Image (cartoon, rainbow, N blue to C red; front, side, top):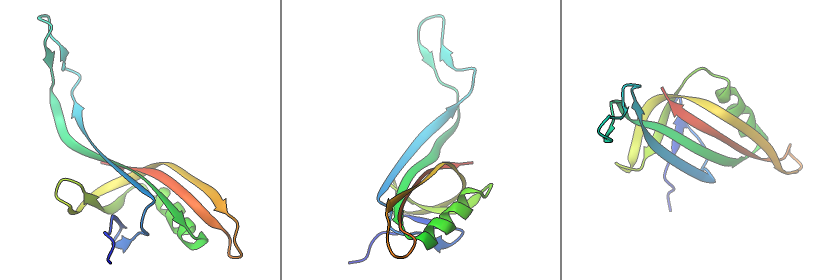
Length: 120
């Protein structure tokens, strides 16, 4: 059975994630809000901005790679889009990077890594 490839960073396939939470939001202008008549007016500047919360259980080697990615100002990301059920490509950056030792092993441990990808 083949698994779906959820994420690729700069063309490199990432391991299968423990969790994958894709969120599509709209960016609204400050001119929107409630009118004098009490109706809501939305001035959408950009629709469908992608935010992905993801977590992995990885080896020390992958921990090192993911840490390097977390420090880059932008990453070419291919992500699994839940609307098309296919990979889409965009530029993103990482926020909220956390690494936690899950279990000590003979080879530098099993690590739980989580972060959020934000689309430019």
